[in-house]
Image (cartoon, rainbow, N blue to C red; front, side, top):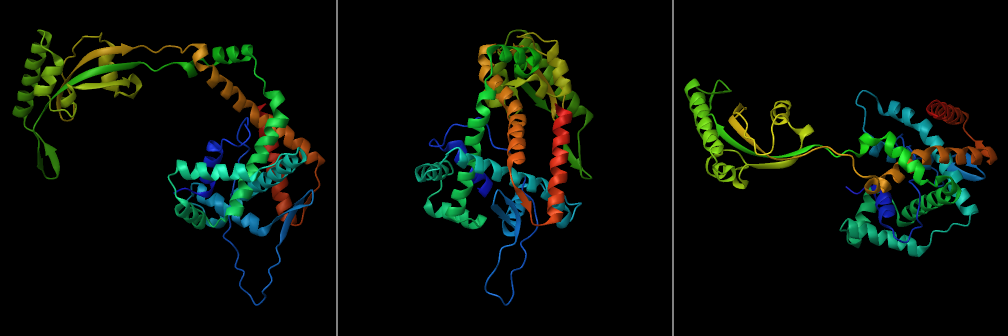
Length: 370
């Protein structure tokens, strides 16, 4: 199902009108509790403010919504209660919420604006890529409990965050040719092509029958199958065409294609088959091997050895890898500066403590990785 988070991702993957960005903004780790009941005699509901960030408020209902979204996206741990899972995710969620507010505010300070044209373009791209008409799109929003205006606010938030990253972090993201070459040398194994082989197979099965819930076969049937595949192999060694022989005699699913298998990565073959093809040259025909269904012989058609892809071929991949390594630390530097300049007023002391502990833990982890 197309969830709200996937709506957001597909919008930014497809919205051509959006400004170019260097990387995804730090994902807000959503998290947990079910919405509190609002039943009661009063008709006016006053929102409980949890924190003010430079005067902008984040409320209890917003936290609850973020927690619900998070629980939908995360893999549930059956060993933990819902309350325990909420407790696990809420500290990091609080950090993410404050960080998002700071980045969005910075985007507005920089004069970034998300236009109606950009929003409409994003919506049309979502509908087109997911083959949704207007009614189906509205149904998706309804299932997620979102209004069109709320979806627009989410798009705008991501647009502003990505715009800030581009403006504020862009200058530090310049990657020189020498840096790319050094990365290429240090990580050569990432750019190796896998060794592949193309085979032909011919299978002679051993008839089985069920006795006591088990598949059994007779020694005589096994010996007959062994003798038959030996005879077929002798004919192949004498020069008969493997393609034609497989089409006529093989009992494998590849019979129609003349026993053709591949090309396949050698690493994906069974250990026994890897050992078998290791000593073969193109054109070689293997000895018969016993498999679950009977006896098989293989012909090695081609072998492509593993090779290092040329630098120019993987240069864009290298740029993206270096950029992804940098974006997190650079964004954290920016956030540290914004936090130092911000007025963050917690209205709930317990949540403030959770926030500060999660932030301290993240800073410690960042320090140990540097």
